[in-house]
Image (cartoon, rainbow over all chains, first blue to last red; front, side, top):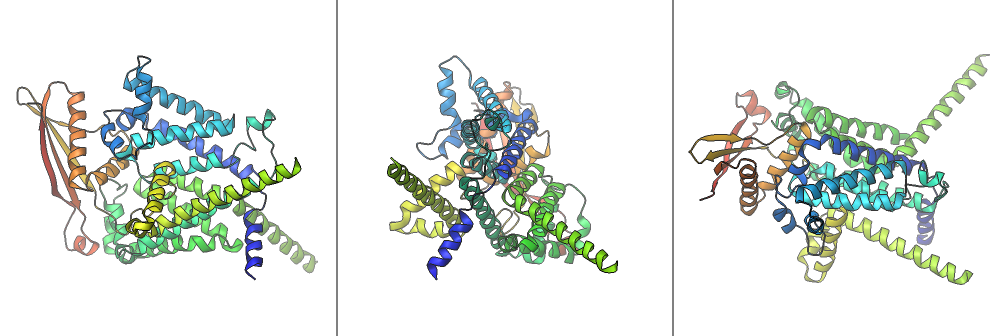
Length: 314
Length: 173
């Protein structure tokens, strides 16, 4: 019995899959990272510079022994006569070029490794100013590093360096991402459920009232407290239910659409657009391919049914 | 030769399976707070340490409870610069877009984590102000946290109000 379950699990987990969804994931993540650079262009030194909002001496102290910091790289570049600020700009320029290379799928493995490493340096250099968006971007880049993201829609394939064919690696790594997303949402839902604010609606009320986030005047919500309470319960149901309903073909597309809507809602009402988009990319990267297949299957079922009905009427 | 290839392939598969297993275990461990429990057990501290390292490198195994269990109120940072003649003027963070405002919210969240962080971050902001304004000899830092009334309190007339949290002064003398 156990061996049969294990065999079924392995069969499900190790099924060869097309690299095309991974290629779309690669393109979306790298495009997102480039947009993020553009959005932050006025504050690059404030974020990543030696004397930014949070100095390197603080971010370095918070990093584990043995792990590299942007300051280490800059120290090496100082030997070439470059100032710290010049070195940061050079590192960022290399980051942008590597992102472009990964976007078009040129030397995908190497460019993914370079992008991920520089992102690691940047995320720790700006240690005091990172939030969920940076964390998920780094996770997405980690998956770009371990997934065969250059096996489709890439220059690597055009040059014959990689083959566009289904592989076990493509299937397994996307399964890992899918399981990761389920753990993320399930734990996030449970963490929220542990607080009273997510049951009485105060969490939504407070979120839209925070001066740092408020996008619209939603003070009227205080007079319809059932509405924020309903939104809170919906968030709890969506997040905890994700781990279950996203595996069921009949509910997957609906759940994914609701999740994407929730993140776009966060973008709209809290102004956290970059966070919203990276979460949309993570969701579609994990389950988008299956959802598109579900949609196509539903449409063909529907057209078969309607043609049967027409035949019966005739 | 074929035997060698199949042995190498088998080892590769086992290593990949082990790596995937560890990756998912680390994610689930932190998400379920098993990590916190392991960090307190002398025999398991090494595993918790490994998880911390893995988290610092990949960020994959983090606590993903954003805005959970409660939504924390935000903070206001006010920096006042004093020049040699004793004139004062405010120092404002350059926040040209929403993205930077979100990041400053995150930064003040880190600032509020402990007294040590209070001082380190305040020192960092003061130094930034002095670096950008060479005539400045003193920077006063004041941080307040917004009190967000509950919906019931709001209906009764209470509004958002800043509450004092932290104050310090840095000078070059």
